[in-house]
Structures are given as structure tokens and as C-alpha cells.
Image (cartoon, rainbow, N blue to C red):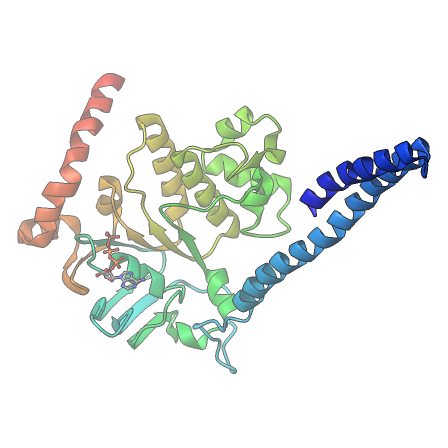
Length: 341
Ligand code: ATP
């Protein structure tokens, strides 16, 4: 159509010029003809390109509806229990789990975390720490055994009440392309600004807010104001503080932050842990020191468990991991102390 649109006036002028010379047409008629032709081609091209737009959008719709029609693997029982606010006892009762046919990611894992206590999961890469943390909020269901909250198998609870009772802070929290207010309030829709400012203060985000050009209305995320790694983690902490669930699943960040940001995150985390049952994938020395129990995982099994000093004395996997992963933190800590002094 584009090519024809460009050639047609040329043809009209060529044929028209001959006709004018022969005296069978007037020059005005030829010019008018060429002008009207261009007016005709615009709408015609638009009409045909609509067809192309409709076709490509139909393909997009198909993909969206395929996605919406997916049946979730995690289903709620018809007679599921609607658990009000849990006391917060988390128990793994002989839990085994496999992602696929090949290999058990967790093998006969049993432990219990009493309300308001902290259990730290440590172990080499691929040991099953993340998998353990995924089974608590039912991101996956145990293949064998049961994960229990306040004595109820999590599969017997309504998904809504389970979600309301568990907060998660992952290593890479997702920040939506939305205002700072919406990014925090989505943990508890309807929260007012006073609540949002309170949790931002507790998560050491007040100085970040002061720097924002439009305060709580500043658009952050993908194409908005860019937040640093430490700031994103503190947003995730503020979300959980706002939601205030009795159980917390925390995957501590492995990425190193500068010492000021590190301090801000650590002090926010310590406020987050207060009064909550916490299962933490520990990467910080201070976290394993404050843990009520440390569970050492290797190849999907708990190979050692106990308190920090007992496990160090044991001289097994934990003491080796501790030497390798955690003792390097001592140097900066003492340097910081030295500079403070
Ligand atoms: P890291 O410290 O590296 O995060 P981890 O202890 O958290 O390791 P998991 O992520 O729980 O380990 O993985 C346990 C095992 O399950 C690994 O062998 C891993 O390859 C496997 N695994 C993890 N996620 C999946 C998945 N989505 N599909 C298949 N296998 C998986």
C-alpha cells in the first residue's frame, strides 16, 4: 500500500499531463485528482494496519489467557481451617521433598521452632536451605511428612490464613514500578501514612525518604528512582513490619553492603526478629550468635544441630563452615570498632 501510495500521484501526473496537452483535461482537475488520491491512501493504510494490530494483540491475549487458566499446583482443601493469628510454633515432621523424580532435595528433616525463637539454617551451597524455607509458606508441598504451624499441617489451612501468618524477606526483594507508599502498603492494603512512616522509621528508611524528591509519592522500581541493594532489603523489612506476622522466613543477603548500609540493615533486622518465630538462612555472624538453635544441612539432611558454641566444640561440618564463611567478618568488625574508638 505504501509503495502504491507513493507511485499513484506520479502516474496521475504522467497520464494527466498527456491529457492536458491533448486538451481533454484541465490542469486543475489533474491536481485535484492527485490531492484526493493522497487523502484516500491515508485512511486506507490505517484500515489495513488495524488488521495487523488486531492479529498481534490476539496472540498476546492468547498468552495472557493461557497464563490465567493455569491451575495452581498448591490447592486449598475444601474443608481448610482458617487459622487466626498463630502462636508461631513451626515444626518439620519427617519431611522429605523432591523437585523432580531424580533426587531428594530434603531427606527426613525433623525440627521444631518454638514461638518467638530463632532457628538458623546453615550449610554448603545446594544443601537444601532455600527448599526448607519454601515449604513453610507452602510455595511447594512436602513429598513425605508434614510441615506444621501451631500443630496444624500447613496443607490443612486456608491459603489466606497461612499467608497472613507468615512473612518472607528474600535476598532479592521485588520492588514494583509504583510509588514508595504503594510498594510498602501492599503488605497490608489500606494502611495509612502514619503506619507506613512508622515502619519506615523502624526499618531505618527515614533518611532514604528524606532524599526522595516527592516523598512517599516518589515512583521507585524498574523505571523509577533506583534503590540500592541495602535500601531494597529495608523496604522488604518495612513490608513485613507492616504486615506483622507471627512467623518470619528470612533469607539473609549474601551480597556485601558498605558498612553504613550493613549497619542500617542489621539494626532493622534485629527489630524485625523481635517477638516472631524466625527461620533464617543465616549469612551473618550476629544472626548465628543470636540463634536459639542452628540446623546444619548437608545434601538435604540435618547433620548437626545445637547452639553455636556446642557445634564449634563438636569440630564437624559446622566448625569448618564457620571458619570458612563467618570468621572473615571478624576483621571488618574489629576494624570498625577500632575506627569508632
Ligand atoms: P544455596 O545456599 O546455594 O542457595 P541451598 O542450600 O539453599 O543452596 P537449595 O536451593 O534448597 O539449596 O537446593 C537444594 C537442591 O535442590 C539442590 O541440589 C538444587 O539443585 C535443587 N533445586 C533447587 N531448586 C530447584 C528447582 N526449582 N528444580 C529442581 N531442583 C532444584
